[in-house]
Length: 146
Image (cartoon, rainbow, N blue to C red; front, side):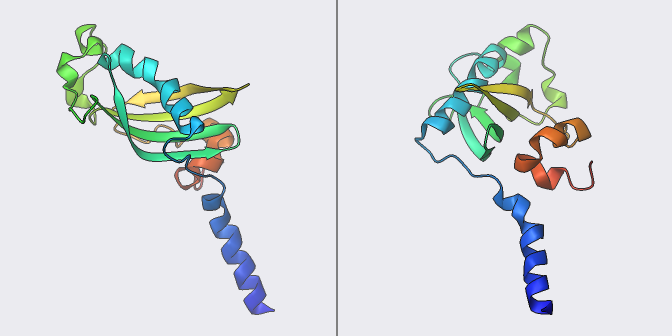
């Protein structure tokens, strides 16, 4: 009986980690998620932008991504040479590089980047209102947050 209880407890603790899946390379879902953030990235960084996926999670109609923006072929993006810097919207010395963190919501058949950041130096998505909606894809950041 104790062994069964321990197994159930272990499953309950690990279940949130199993609630999401990573859309595989080449899938329509992965492409749609990248395409949802791309216009924002191109507005800030200039086109073209390619993403290196560090983390990509989807659960039903929500998703989370941690992406490094680069030029096609792997070229680094100099934040001081970007349209957003030229407009006075970026402060590269206060940023953590060309990293995007994105929260997505599916609207009908379209993925929408509803919250995102470029170069964040904190975990802005670890916030109660965000955790209430996106916990299935960011559970480890929501520990202790109601």
